[in-house]
Length: 476
Length: 101
Image (cartoon, rainbow over all chains, first blue to last red; front, side, top):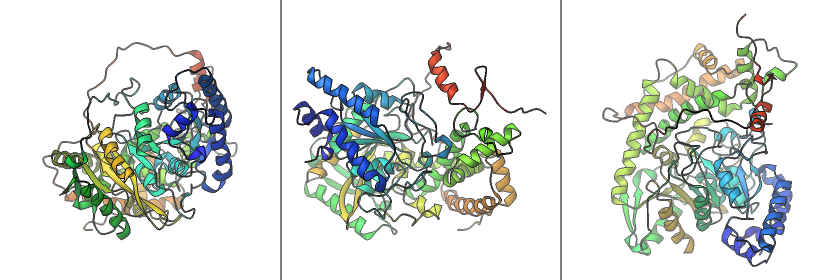
């Protein structure tokens, strides 16, 4: 078996038993990236030299028989919206094309403390706004399972890199489904943690009340390892919390699974529905109790999200002004820049791509004078009702099972000209972000060669439980 | 859909100005159409009875986190790294165009 195909704990054992060195492991991945990145375009930037020198350090640790943390020497890929000191961080945007991160994000600091090896930064929809990675300002990523199709998004580069064994594991971010939907499209595991479980310090902000960093991995066990390494309270992010929820996964026979009827409606691909129901059936056969539940405000999640997320984005992206960092038109010789206002509007006009502009415009509109109550305040109240739907459901069940996406991966170009249709591909993932809950996407079968993901949603801070539940299916 | 919202070219220009976002003439027309169609979709929220709901600004309840109001010194090399990212600086400050004539 090629070491690039190993899970985290398998690779860790391989390093410990000296079946291969950390340097060899790293070189294996770099060679594979060199060969395959041209067609998949998962990576925007490869940190070859720093990865190799870090790998050599790990080999010294091994030869000195020092204790080896589980993630030491396992090469990872990082979505290009998370800062790694000294390496470019573009957020998939022209406006940050030459931005060098001046510090490490907390998740990166934590991984570096475990002696992680960072291979490079992965492609994404510009500022994480999109569901196909076609909104990258550089080039689209392709799905390694079928190159004519999208990998999903916005963490499409990270999911594609894991699926194609171009890294041991990856970090992604999820604001409305951006970890789970690409994990589903590429046939890998993705975990969106509870809001607050992982520090957002050093994450380029999109919608601050929804954004979370999480792992994209080959197995459920790997997702657990990475989640444990990156989670916890951080004084640099005042919304981060130390979870003290003790959640044990008892026997599958005492497990109560809720299946919301609102998630099996017209518009869902028949083959996808069959696979999801088949997966649920497997749990039932093992003794779990399956209950039909209702989340009555489900159909309002998407319109609610398309008020809240663009509103927060329009405020967050105000910082790209052509003055502090990022692209600025003042340096452009040809332009006719006279006033400060010309710098603001010109730099932003030239630096931001179409989807980002659309959301800034939408967010600015719904927050503008006279519209606040009709849109933003109303959306925040609907958000409460969506949260309460889940709260009520979790009084009766341990976990909620749904599809991740209504269809498998679609073709490049298929939805790019119609923003509303593109938004609809996130219809099953968005409510989870509005409610702040943890959820995983787990491969549960294929339509032809296209993977389909099952979504398992849990109570706040019960990542451990949903991971344990997911592991049961993985073993079948 | 009951109400058909159509925002005007004037609206688009006004929003773009508020957002400090330069637009081309073509884009103004494009946004008129696209924003109208998204706004019509969002109208769906009007169906929901929100009379008893409190607004949610954060999904997980957290309390304000305070710290002492003290200046924390930044190392000069960090300051340099950050200033080096700016397109124009002068004597250790960010340089901007004049705002008064």
